[in-house]
Length: 137
Length: 75
Image (cartoon, rainbow over all chains, first blue to last red; front, side):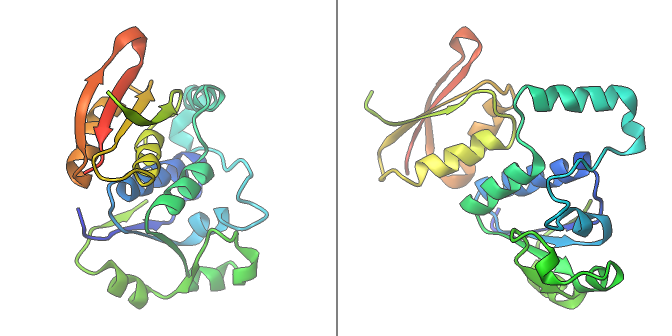
């Protein structure tokens, strides 16, 4: 439980972002360092002007899935952003933007929400992941 | 039982109850007790796993009136 958990967050729909936040938050609560590497649509979801927007759900959710997620939100479930902020406050959660994805999306670090700690390339990501597990979302 | 800190995690779903537990236990000294109440059924196994992993002791738990109550002693 001391090994760093690294999460490559490629997807940008609210359901997958929430899943990533739950995995990060759980690890942080257990005292495990977490590193999140934002790629493509995952990165896009962390843009300052986008982070609070509705990112939708994957197609397989369908109408029933949409209704279920809306019901959970109405019942007070925290959003993925709130869960991540809580996790960051409590544990070692480091969030880095993939530099290649930054290039593709033509982003500067100032376009990103301050919750993102920096920009790094894949080699740095692998070094920081060490012997810990790497999860792709 | 001298509960030093009471945390209400009612209505919060995973992983917020254990995040709140972590937040709360950080404010306590070794030996002090924290009570945490949750409504998420997943919290039963989560709290046990959290206590086991972090080294704090789950001294008491019950589920009266539909809520899950846990008392944790700081290690």
